[in-house]
View (cartoon, rainbow, N blue to C red):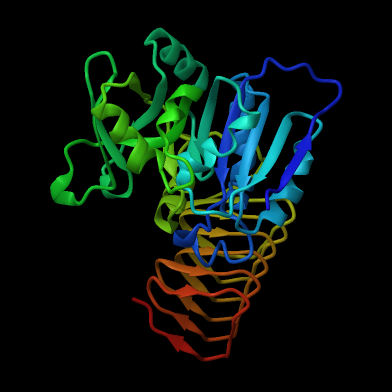
Length: 371
């Protein structure tokens, strides 16, 4: 059964520039952070990722959106209604395994001849207006945004000629297969006619299937290489890295923070955060209504809304989801991720890279070994 929800603000007039946002995925690599929320509703510098993406497209002149949803879709649909007075959008259920290109093709009835397609776990400063200009200047029928990365095994990689036309593409290569550090940034400009090459009613992905297919047939598919900031926050490590980059001024964010400096680092917290006499290294970012009691030491850590950290607790590089309570004198080793609504008793040790499922209750004195 197809779910269709449409919101059209009556007072707006549209130029019919559209974007399809791929927001159906489970976000398995981010678990347990996505245990109770879809990946687009992950907070980044206290702003939801989906809101950052929508605003960037609005800034580029996009005013009509289609969201393809599935996992925890009720929460995403509820959140998107906050935008109903600013943009026209449609929500389509994407609960069948047709791949990214196949899913877009199955929903072509609402789309115009040219439109954006974007993943929903991006932190980027890309200039989308420049990408549109490049697309038209090259006579492209499908343009892929590319950035540079040293972690090519997580992305599709490509080569292109001097005009930007793609000559080779490989999805998530092994280290021995890598021939480029130019990686797919997850934003495309697509002509309807390009999707004529997507077979009906079968799994067909943009990067794994369609791009190599079109390149092999000398189709006008181009790569737009940009220098502005980009990061895929679909992994815990990349989420923390992007947060650090925001602290360093490489990523813009719209929320206001109280900034507290320490000889070894900086704390970004909200007005409703209660912070005792603590030490912090590199960076610590808090959500709303966070409590950090006296004599705590934190480093490279993000605390979501409602987290409470007991006195004399040590945290070294962690992501702690909403409404987690951590007792006194605990040791949280590097790489720990704690899911929402978890209670950790006093004197608990959580080992390196441990992923603690949400709604857990860890008794006092427990030692959990990580990886």
